[in-house]
Image 1 (cartoon, one colour):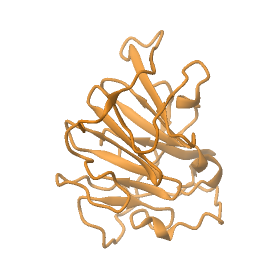
Image 2 (image 1 turned 90 degrees about the horizontal axis):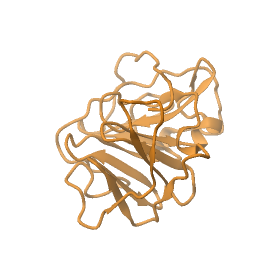
Image 3 (image 1 turned 135 degrees about the vertical axis):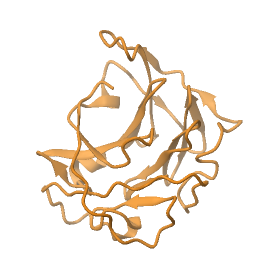
Length: 205
């Protein structure tokens, strides 16, 4: 990764009616449905979203791409915007994508993938950590929460992202991202872990 991340401590688990294999991180309860978001209230104090537990079953949601958590879709194409990373021996190359709106973008290496939602920097639906908005979502399942990241990441002018049209799916190594008008779904085809992201919230699986 090119940016540094700051993790917030997790609070006690919140009560939710969502299935155990799919959790939606919200600004008010930590885990719930995205409808509970109140974007008109921009509290800059650090909130502490809960860390959901990823399940092994196939995710099911009105927003998540139907094939999420499974093998790479047959129509998925290889990401072509791939750049070398100088001075980072452990991450020699990185693929970079973004949605047509430009609001969501991802950085993908052979062993890590993460996506950022630009609107979260201003709206701060998940609050901030030490003044840094939580806007970055790891896709590998190791940290299932929205992170505070200082750097620009996929919006780096030296690495122009590939635009993924709505209705298309792309892949790089073991990671797949499917772009739809209602959001972006990305997942690890080996572990089945991933996330569905849009302006309203993040659902991990």
